[in-house]
Image 1 (cartoon, helix red, strand yellow):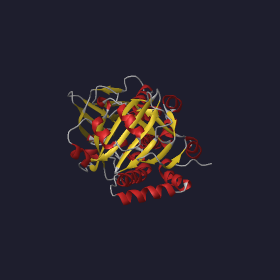
Image 2 (cartoon, one colour; image 1 turned 90 degrees about the horizontal axis):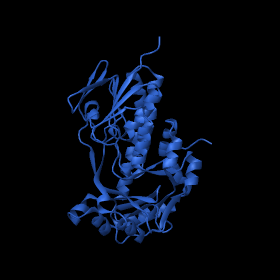
Image 3 (cartoon, one colour; image 1 turned 120 degrees about the vertical axis):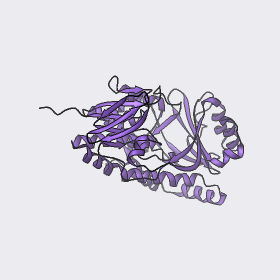
Image 4 (cartoon, helix red, strand yellow; image 1 turned 90 degrees about the vertical axis):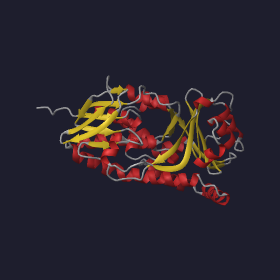
Length: 385
């Protein structure tokens, strides 16, 4: 007799939730996703995906679609005046890691994942307000008064996850003291050869930019929270122009090419890593499991890897409880290292003492290329020759 189809309920339809739905459907699960927002379209920003995330998308059968919707990009670090401190090409990354770093509009990645799911998988405008486990699965109570039950409940509901509150109960997330701005603008009349692609560091702040398909530029900036208090209540575009006025002039050009209403800004948080985030019939993926600061560019990549690892564990072991333990053992130690590495990088980025900044820049510029790559290997995962 054929085994009964197992059911999963995923709370949250971001990258982690949609990728997990795709992974589980490919291994025979009946999946429903509830999303409190009335739309799947996130705010208009870009995202970079390292090779580990691309490999996960390949496992999900989405490599071709992802490559069509994204651009391969190199990576460079600069000082605030545009002087290159370190760089690596997309060809070098492809050789070492199997895939280059790729840039994609966040909404395009969300659409790609959603379009890969069965019809009526995602239910918009339904907010989970309470979660309860029982011996045979879990039940989520919704804002419309209804309940949904499944053999497995998966929290993909981000930094302040309702499901995490029940499973881990570790309170509020950790503040970083850093605020980030993000935006997308047309490249317009800006000369691509003039733009300092990658990240520029200086004065305790970071400005990054990468190309997106369609002649667009995705840019992001970070600054200490104190900078906002100091400058008062001004428009984000005005503040960005003030903070980065003395940097490479292309940075000012990118900011000027952006409409003020297209800039989003928020304070950055993470959580202290934990090695257990599951219950007998419930678990977490993505930012609900291991929220991290963006300084290693690994938030989406780690979420995509979670999706594949969870589906693999559940396919290998019919017992959900022991499969979730295997999933945690495969993912928790690694993601803990990435969370810690991201926080360490954030500490370096926000350094404001001039002599320490000078020392950092000197150390980065003198690092042998082989050592730079070896530091990436633990995060991205080198492909065996």
